[in-house]
Image 1 (spheres, rainbow, N blue to C red):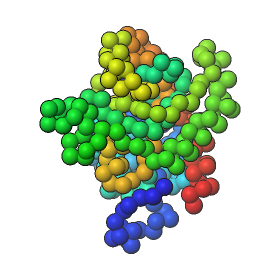
Image 2: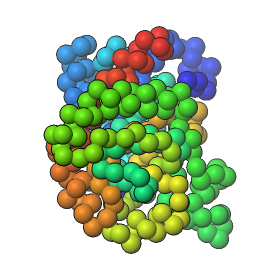
Image 3: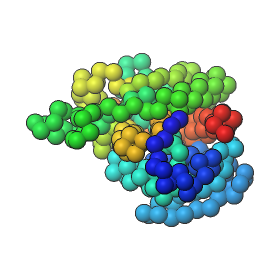
Image 4: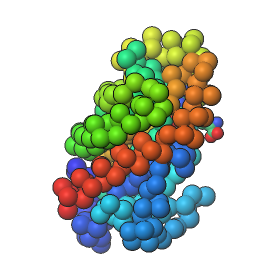
Length: 270
Ligand code: SAH
């Protein structure tokens, strides 16, 4: 998990204590993380750019936990603050998303190995989806971090998946890895999701923040990883499915995944 922070920053700050940034859009998507931090180390909250950043140690890992709110600009601004105000060594995003891939069902988990902004279009100046001046449309998440996150998801599904499926009367959740697409739209029609599938046949999930975080992290050389639980399938039922999933179950997923991820992170990275 390399970062390419500049020498001045490294000389003035102890690399061993650089925190991990943990980000979600909505409070439900953080599960019990802030309460767990409060119980473990206490929480120091700093407000910056109208957002609260919660600093402390949780499951053995020094973290800065915050809410980006919804959309790409919100996510990019928050990511930038995590990097420049809090000197995070890496960023992990946790939240919900709409399923796009044919085999991706509500209750499944998608780890975004690659991320793309599906609403970027500067044609004819640049190819469709390409981020102007960066020469690319797709941004890779950090491999080691994504692997650790996927391992945590697998352990979560193994240990809690059957109980979750019984409780919520769904199939046992599966963990997928691949392309996550982001845009400033809540996708909620069969037509819209079909258009996204046609444009990006390998897309697994659609959401509103991940690719913005991946772009900022790419620009600053900070590793990032994105995990999304599928709350809806981006069709006509999306808003009701999203709302009940968020209230009833999103927190259970985030709590279970983040706990396993952070415990492993504490033992390997320090
Ligand atoms: N009305 C909601 C707004 C939620 S927007 C509210 O009350 O706050 C949906 C959020 O969940 C975004 O953060 C996005 O990243 C994710 N998401 C889940 N399903 C989605 C879908 N079908 N399309 C786009 N984003 C989705």
